[in-house]
Image 1 (tube, helix red, strand yellow):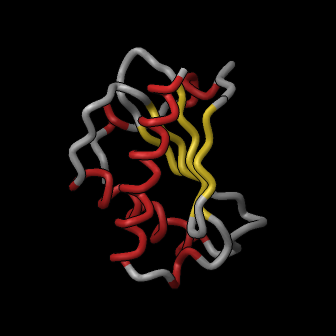
Image 2 (image 1 turned 120 degrees about the horizontal axis):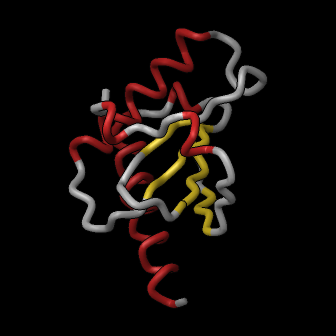
Length: 110
């Protein structure tokens, strides 16, 4: 798990409208401008029914984020898709790296 300082709190979600998205095969990722770098993983019960599976996906995503060095101070919200619990860790790592690279390059263009 990520430390509490790196995770979104309830008040961080209030009034946020992500404008930059990465649409992947395993998850969607949104970039949000906040004063400090934070991460969140939002999984609807409608998407993945069992809490055990939702928690496993969150742990896998947060573990990958913890092992990656990110230069920007941007905040990210991950929205895993159905079937993301069967994806191997290697593919998950590659897609997270691709999401960070894509979202960082999109912001440079603006």
